[in-house]
Length: 167
Image (cartoon, rainbow, N blue to C red):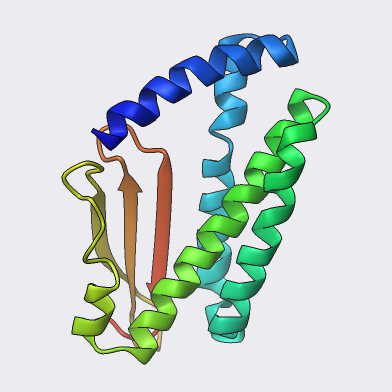
């Protein structure tokens, strides 16, 4: 039900945005979904720099910075600015989420960490996920998890890496 309501709102919002920016619905659709680009970049950056990032500080910073592009979207003067702000939103959202998952994995038991997501409405928003390992020559492999939601038409992508924890 939630997914259906969100889709109806998006179907009404996209044409209105396309008219406001005087661009095609396809161009506006790309701009609206540009946050996925930021999410992918942030997932890779967090994975690469994860040992150097203080989890709690990173989560708070990412969430605080998220407010800036979110507020500026309301006054974005053109499609290029709108698209850039959506990419920055994706960077901040994915960073906060990946760091939160890392923090939970490091600070909580498996049962406690799983409980953090117990209320997620999987029946309304199906999530696709994939786990794996990344091998590093001479070092213990890294574990990773990638998820996309909704599974049938992804709007959100999250990647989390736990270094030297392949089991």
